[in-house]
Length: 164
Image (tube, rainbow, N blue to C red; front, top):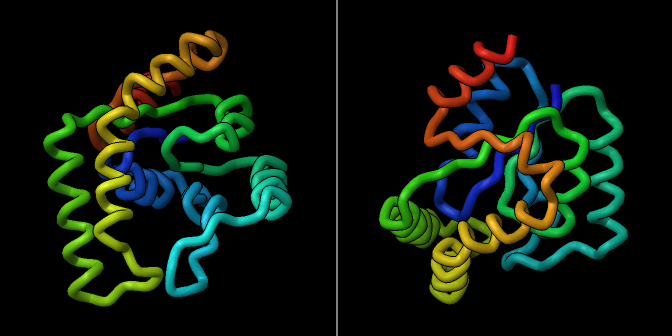
């Protein structure tokens, strides 16, 4: 089974993906670790070659869960997967989660460091995400048929039960 979990920053994609991967015994890949070099003190974008190499390696495996926000590089995964879970939670909840994430990262001195500027960019991205994803899916009807709205892990479990 190949599953994509998409949604804006702060929606809970990583948490849902981790729970689902454990329950289904699937490998999980966070798109952030494909797109960003997180080995340093700050986030840096990986080279196009590095991103492509990581995508090719994952796509050529039989089963996986990939979670991330929409990016053109995610398109390959969206085509390859059998189901796309779109995490749909209200903006106020995403806002609160992103602020909490920033504060925890500051307190724990997590590396790579999250700056207030990064957090404002994520808040802005999260605010505009739903409309941008809707526009993208309207252009790619073959993907739209795979999309199922969820709000949490329970929603995923229900859908997967129905599809068996």
